[in-house]
Image 1 (tube, rainbow, N blue to C red):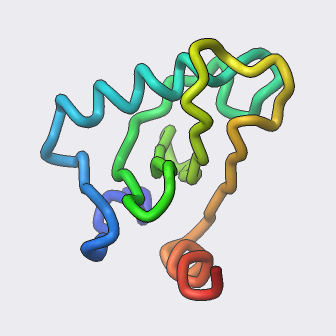
Image 2 (image 1 turned 45 degrees about the vertical axis):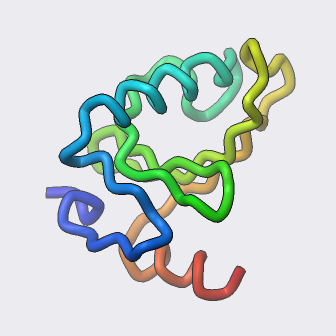
Length: 101
């Protein structure tokens, strides 16, 4: 089981693991912004949570977990790496990212 499946999000996050409508909305938003050449392109990513202080969404694909900073453009960016994306290999790495921002 990937570490993100049992991760406990704090109050700064909206957890989508029991919110299919939220998950669908953010999946559509990410699909609209990711273009060819972007590390998320061509794979089906599942939104896991929204980080409220910024326009960022935690996504997963298999064991891969990433934080995507959305741009809210009408179409996908033709200039990857936008939207910016940070990958995490563990819960500790994920927590540290937010602790030291």
